[in-house]
Image 1 (cartoon, helix red, strand yellow):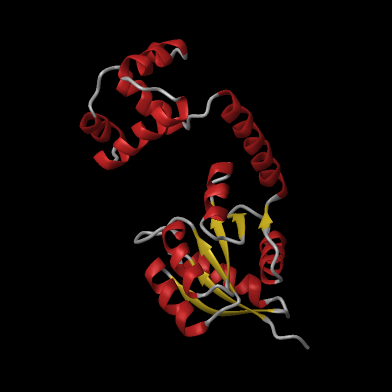
Image 2 (cartoon, one colour):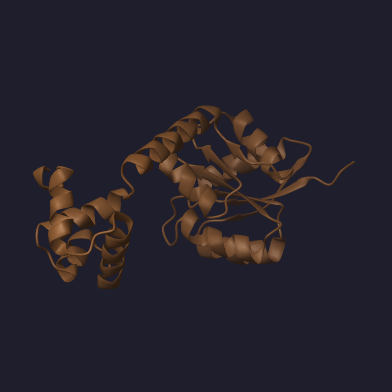
Length: 214
């Protein structure tokens, strides 16, 4: 018999952890080996237990699953991380995979889907709900189309609009809750992408795009 898939369950709600443990323990090829209620506990438990799969909630009180994910991936490259989330927005899925997740499953998913997701990531595959995956593909295709039409990201368009309205980097940073350095970086990228040399050119571009009418 092959060794069972060893799973660490991470969720800040004890009742959710208990439910997941009962669900997984029913499977002959899966063994829940530990639980954690915070991102910090997840890091320590992963070091101690060295699970095959970490089934982890995205929203937790100390650190989100996305916050702690890079640490887990760096320290345990052989361990697969499967994120649990209530968010069905494709942007969250994209962010999760970019951070190193192997799977993304919705909390509302059927029990059988959670089990299937654990098995899929354990064997080295990736898992995302089929409907959500289709929406992700459609969103990426739409993003590529928009990138061809407009090279700026949504955040860069926000910064461009504020720059064209005459705001300083400091004012932009305060309004968008970012650092002054980040605002300066956005400005530099905007000028580079659009091949602009002056604020006057920047204002003309913003007017042409209708950004000052919003």
